[in-house]
Length: 161
Image 1 (cartoon, rainbow, N blue to C red):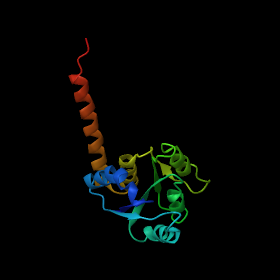
Image 2: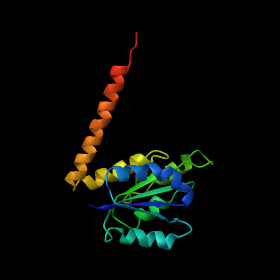
Image 3: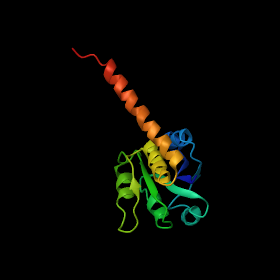
């Protein structure tokens, strides 16, 4: 199975990424997490992205706030899918990070999830890897069915007169 790289621009992003780690673990997806900054460690971030495919990664998740150039900087160095998580900061409630992450030039896409949307980033990475992994695809289908069952159970318990 391909691995997922989870890159954060700062260790202060770690609490936001916990749902991502939990989701990857629940799906038994191997992953590595690192702190690389697009601005403070650009050479290291670029080197990681450039070598990621050869190191067995199938997708990269990048979480950053404020200027949030991390996902784009990584996408510039790899053809692996990059998923950006804009991180809410005290400055503009994450809108600055969202716009920095989603506004990529043609030819260098970054898939972007919601502000602080770490769990969905993990699920999207899993779906990308599941294109060629039937076992993982089955786990995703089972998870969807479980969500369906939970919603229907809530519907049954709902008693509106």
